[in-house]
Image (cartoon, rainbow, N blue to C red; front, side, top):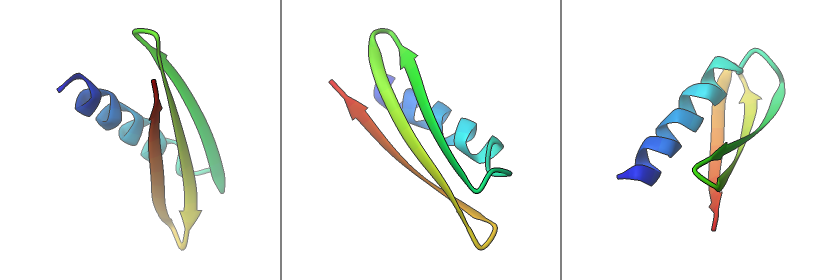
Length: 53
């Protein structure tokens, strides 16, 4: 559940940053590093969230 919440947070953060062509987001939460790529393709933000453990 914790990772699901973190992924949801990263998704919302990426969508809010969709005004940029490509946004790289690195979020550190509870010692976990979340890397999210947000690529604006045709006005659609497609974030890819990976969690490094």
